[in-house]
Length: 150
Image (cartoon, rainbow, N blue to C red; front, top):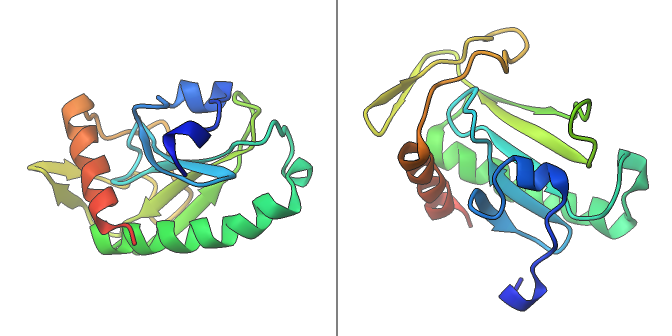
């Protein structure tokens, strides 16, 4: 997608730091780093369409979702060797269609001299327990994921 084709950012994307946190953009989706790193490499997968329910998305958006999730999972596996991956579609506070993509780890991970814990393992992810990162650390995580992207 060229710069002239960039989508407008919906309120959910803006809340999660767009455009600064965007790792990869597609025609119908954007992948953003989740600023609050519940686990190492936690992402937001946000739809560009003005949809408030998954069923409101176009067929083209659903078709592209297959490509996006395949590339996203491959990049995260290469970057951080996660044990499992969870997609959470909560949309209680942020109503635009989006997923929280949470890589899961049985053991702590170390990245850029920082220890990351998956506080919810092996149960549901605990989004209230975050690994405190700053902008510099988040930029390093984003760069690493981008380097691992196909």
